[in-house]
Length: 433
Image (cartoon, rainbow, N blue to C red):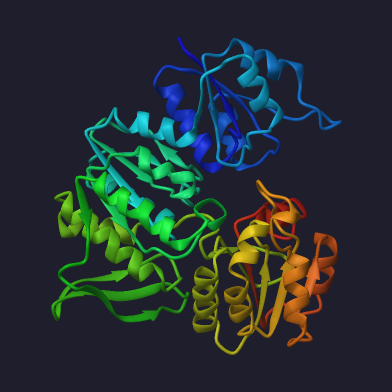
């Protein structure tokens, strides 16, 4: 039995891969600096996770496991000068990025369905999985988020369908050879790696070439007559060439999901799924955590968490909140995700938050970076404060919570956006359940 040690094992993609490797018969363990949902899932699946000691040191057993393993897998957040990476190199271990493992696992399936793009891929991937699931196909799923219905980022099914997100960061998606590929959209993103939008587009073009079929909306399928019911849930029709295909009443709110439904429909049709199962799969879909997810709070009636961390995504989340919660005060709390993204897309971030009366910036989730790699949340807040006296910056949740309590519980919408750890912090502080 091969022993695999995973660096950054608690990440949403890595933890799903770890469970899949174990299901394939590997002995899996790993290291992570943080606890979180992924670590809990690993522990529930009897996968050992090494964490820092109380003094923030790496336990000796971690080095011993690396010394005794056959393969080291690392997430994109692990840098080359990481102590454990350096030790693995010193021990002459075979070291591969997570994209390689995802590609290898996918080769065990007849048909790989891969969803790529700058925005919308997590929800669209989960929608496609749910359509196939209700149709009785028993697909396997690798997801870059946690489904609301069961809280998981994976599903182990049969060997016909492998449904996965295809992440472009570090060109991880180029290790896949999809049977069917979908590209939701392409915008400037991850420029800390790609260096230019042209380079990013070249990678997406290579992804297309690596795919047997690329789904495109050649027949002009559209979402029409979009509205919300009394609970804010989406109601609309799918229309093709002026002819109604189906009416849909979803369990999710954000209007961007109309396009996600269009994309999921097109992929499902390419896979030969009937309209009745597509409709059932979409209407039974509960959503993905922190994708415009409403959370229960004892302090406010309306609290929403959204993973949006790119200006385009944030703008759409804000527009949805304004449409659904009319005549209420909107307070947007944004945790920047990486210093480099804040610097690269600064004009776009400023433009987005100019549309918000109460923009609040929380300390940057640095992930793999240092402040010197770009601009911080504090830097962004100072720029916003030049034109908006209501703009605020907080690096402490307790202080943020005190400030928020100054708003009306019933007449205020709190929209938390970002891809960092703010949802976890809010939960740990019992601000939300």
